[in-house]
Image 1 (spheres, rainbow, N blue to C red):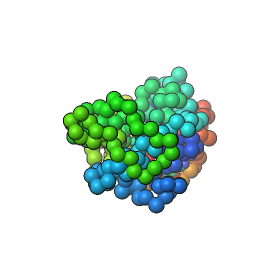
Image 2: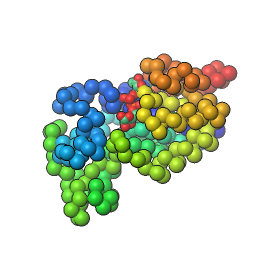
Image 3: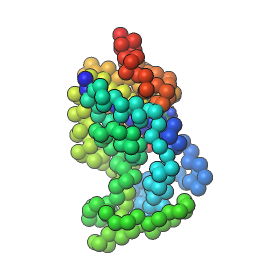
Image 4: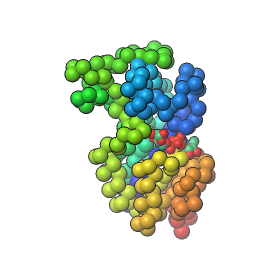
Amino acid sequence: MQLTVLSGAGISAESGVPTFRDVETGLWAKVDPYEISSSEGWQRHPERVWAWYLWRHYMMDAVEPNNGHRAVAAWQDYADVHVVTQNVDNLHERAGSTNVHHLHGSLFEFRCDACESQFEGVLPAMPEPVEEVEPPLCFCGGLIRPNVVWFGEPLPERAWQQSVAAVGNSDLVIVVGTSSIVYPAAGLPEAALANGIPVIEVNPQRTPLSDSATVSLRETAASALPGLLQRLPTLLG
Ligand code: APR
């Protein structure tokens, strides 16, 4: 059986990682995340954008995968599992998932904003969150930026093609922890449904997908995912 999991920030919420649209606590509460995670924000004040992503990069050291990530990794013993994630954290990989497609990039990859070459240097330390850190310079003189997808930027072509293929070849798509409002990612479950592939949504809140999903569970990732495969005969009939 081939199974695709489409995950969003909600699957990492129970690991203590704030979802994208939660109000950031502490240092960033007063900063509009759209402002510091956009190419316009990067052009205007790269040192603030760099500080935010560097903080989020280091914050990952303090969190662990939760039972939701671990369940998805365990499903690899029973099915061919593709994980298509909008998350830039590495919790699916740390839980053991080996087939992860990052549609919106990763906090663990950096590149030059001029020549696009991958940054392999040493990251500046960040003992505690600060509001501004000068980004490192590339040999070509460009600024090193996080390899994440900002609003208005295209998705990584290879990750997108792999995700479309994974969904198209799946027997089941499980959508977990996403508000299903950001396209093109939000279009993947719609395409599955249009091709007669069942879609199960796991989200404590309703979303625009809830009415069209084959099944929509008002449950959290860490509580619903561990026993979900055993429930499939009942859920899908
Ligand atoms: N288990 C499952 N779902 C949860 C949980 C949980 N414990 N906690 C919250 N959620 C749900 C929320 O109800 C919400 O629907 O997770 C979803 C998080 O939605 P967003 O914060 O919008 O995150 P996401 O859907 O991943 O955002 C998509 O938008 O902002 C851009 O690039 C950013 O990748 C992000 C994309």
